[in-house]
Image (cartoon, rainbow, N blue to C red; front, side, top):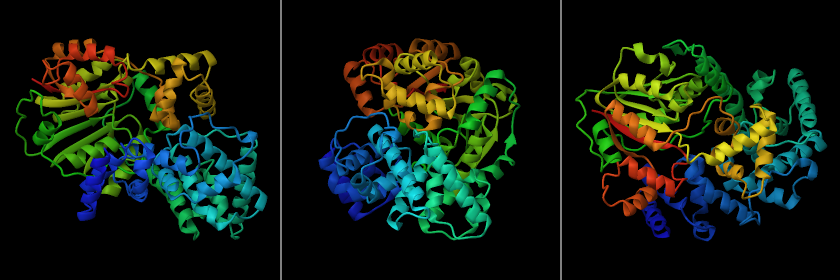
Length: 540
């Protein structure tokens, strides 16, 4: 990996294209230790700031570097310490305030490291105390860090734990800010940052007055995130079209969950790469697959079913040349987020509110249907799958993502823990539940969920552990459905290292499409599909 990083660094020096940046970021994110990554620190920070790749490729190595800076190179993940146990040591706070890599990480994505979360929780309390004690403002050098922390809290939807005294202090500062705004008096920039660490600024009655003022750049950026963008989404919701009614009882429960917590809340899209015609794109994606020729078409018709907040629809649009894309979802809040992001990128994607179970009368056919992570939230996943297949052209391709029952054993253990303790899907209960899960012994079955990236945001944790509807599947069940529907299995989208291992064990399956062999492989490696069974099929 170190040699690959070196080669990518040289390529960057010669020609810093988007492809070269993305390649460097992926390689450097795979480095096994911080000693090898230290010389690349500035580029890692720049890559996070400017979105060279998905933040998930870089957040692990970035967190490791940051913990080294703070004297915590191998600290285990712990439950964030309650602020009532004391604040952050001044020296540690100073080191965090001056750490540019930490600021860029906080602004890019939810911080997915338990020890860093603990420190950020304490840092938030320290900044709240500093603003409360000063009565006006805290030192100017704290402001960029405070605003970055407020942006992080907005991204993770205020998942950090808070002590009982913090809401009182926040209300006091929020009230003082409201009085100053109403009186057209000067307002300390620190107040906006501190309030934004605990609640979204667009929820304040004085939000309009906040954005009408001139602020230092870090506060101005914070107001864009927490006021202007939510206001834009609110306006978009009124303009969304509805393709179908949403009247199924389970669909309405799922819709309500994602109206409250659009998922996922992302900042920068995956980097743009050179777009390919659909046929070439699929042959590059599944080079070993028995892929039949696609029906000729002037433009590829693509449906993204269950598009959520739009990240996947945007990625598909940027990868497939000349595509006409319709993206649907139950949740207007998720769609508004998707539309705002898509408009900012200038991409031609049509969004609409619809229920998969009512799409049978749509009157359109598609060359490609993307249905990743949506069917298992329907009342009847296979019924929904059949409806989508009815919209797929002969020879068309469908990409599907379904949960593996075997791989979700730790999630099921965590849900049993949640049921036993009586936690509800409310923000306060989710925060308390997270603390209790991280405090479990390391070998407790439910403790494994704390390693999931979704554990570190409110919407992610709700989707992971508190979902109102979830089905889990096995490969024999999927194989039976494919045979019933006469679908050709093309292959899994999975880590190349997993494919290599499977290939070593199963040399008699060069196309890697034998689901019976994959089932045996999964039984020996039960976590390989921890995310999902993500695969594609062709309608033959």
